[in-house]
Length: 334
Figure 1 (spheres, rainbow, N blue to C red):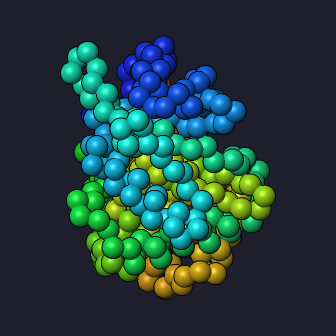
Figure 2 (cartoon, rainbow, N blue to C red; figure 1 turned 180 degrees about the horizontal axis):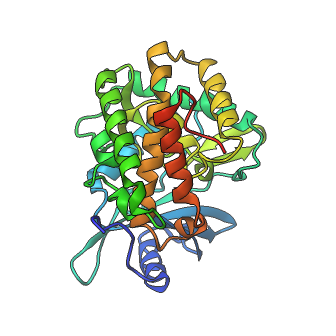
């Protein structure tokens, strides 16, 4: 494995760390802790005073404190436009980002968020939810293009090198479980083709800027006809239409994936136009995301999500690479 990714702390150790973190907040925010999920970070449900909150414990070796503070700045600015996104809770000292020093000298960060109500959709989701998602994503992008970022703002970079090279943020795609060595060549050829395509596309401010970068099903909440967006932990600088590719993360091979893409685009076009040049790059962005997820599956093999993908997921990924190289169809679907 080429990248240190998954958090090595046990659930019990994370719970103790979460308990220590809550002590920094007023008594009204201290209550029962329940581990919700572990992926890039550990997320806990906090139940206190009849209300719910989400405590995010960041893993080490990923974001700096300034990165997390920048994320919160964007969330604050988005809420001012009426978009439903998480809001951080300040501690007794007025701080929204906690720095936690572990015994071995490692610094961990934590943020407590107000809870956002909603139901998480599954792969049987009404495709109109993707239309809502496309609509909201376009609003995020419009805000990103016009927002004057504060001094010192910094976030992670999501470009071709940081997504699919052997030195990518999530490791080397060759480490993906069940990926056959004989299929490496197909993936390498796909990466080369995508790299050339996106180099030609460039990073003009119209098509490249601050994005969510992980707008997938598990980061959507449906509530009374609205689609709410959570988990901006991976927000950073990338191609705007990467958010479309991220919308169908891990399920690009699903039989309804092309339908989801179509509805996302319809929703987006209700707010902002996608140019012909951008439309032409969608296949490259879709397959780049799938290869990026191969790397993620390898570096996060211990996670419940990675283990749920099944033994055929890598084979589906290679099949979609071949579709991208050999046809004009979108590299999605059965």
